[in-house]
Image (tube, rainbow, N blue to C red):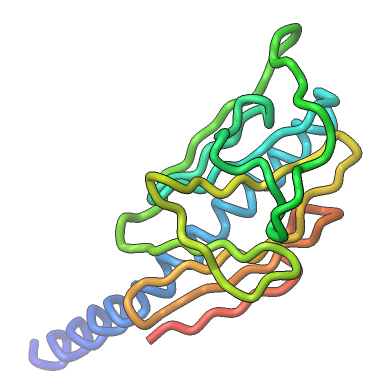
Length: 166
């Protein structure tokens, strides 16, 4: 019985120790899947789509319906293209929740700092009908652990990933 208790105790401790890693890996996979859906929807429907980063959730929706709080690039230039009316055909909308322990940060191409979504600021990630997306890096932090994923602008998949779980 004592040996079984020691083995069970070690197993539980190992699971608890890897918990931040599991939470970050799952969130990373969900965000990548949502990015692939956004790219596919933009190509299929031939209109821009967007992912909005909120504090504990991400929303996939047509770009024309995306938050009005951000219509500029990281350098302050107006985002190119015209908004497409969402009328006239099916549109894809989806939302995923992010674990409340995870703090999100988004870093735009050609910038150095990660910006956290807030009630007053909702970063928007654009996906165009030609299959291109804005190159961004998403950083997720749980305590002292973090995962950082840089997305490829041609495929909307993770091009570079970094994970440090403590």
